[in-house]
Image (cartoon, rainbow, N blue to C red; front, top):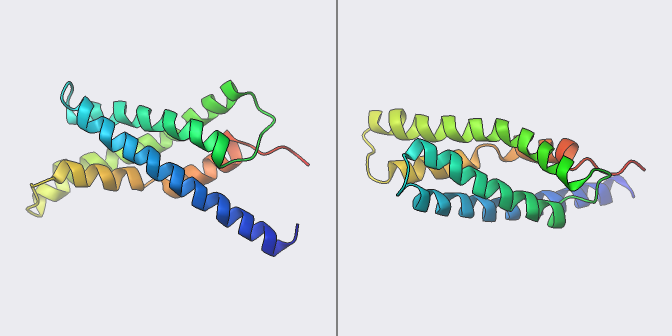
Length: 141
C-alpha cells in the first residue's frame, strides 16, 4: 500500500471513529438526562460516560479498527484505561464550564447541557490515538 492509500485508509478510519464517537456521545448525553433524575449532575456525568463507553467499544471493535491479536477482554480493559484519561477530561471540562465558567460569564440557561456536550467532545483526538495504538493494537505484519 502506498502513502496515498495509507493516508486515505487512515482518514476513512478516523471518519468512522468520529461517526461511532458521535453516536456514543449521543448515547452518553441521553443517558445523562435520564440518570440525572436519580443522582447528582456530577455522578450522572460519570455513569452516563460508562454507557457511552460500552457503546463506543462495541461499535469501534467491529466498525472502526482492524482485527487485533488481542482477546476481546484485553481490548476492553485497554479501552477502559484509555477512557480513564478521557473521562477525567470530560468531567473536568463539564464541571468547570457548568459550575464555574458559565455562571461567571452570566450563562445559566442550559449550562449543564452545553457544558456536558462540550466536555464529551474534548477527548476526541487523545481517544482516537489511544484506541488506535493501544486498545485495538493492529496485527503485526
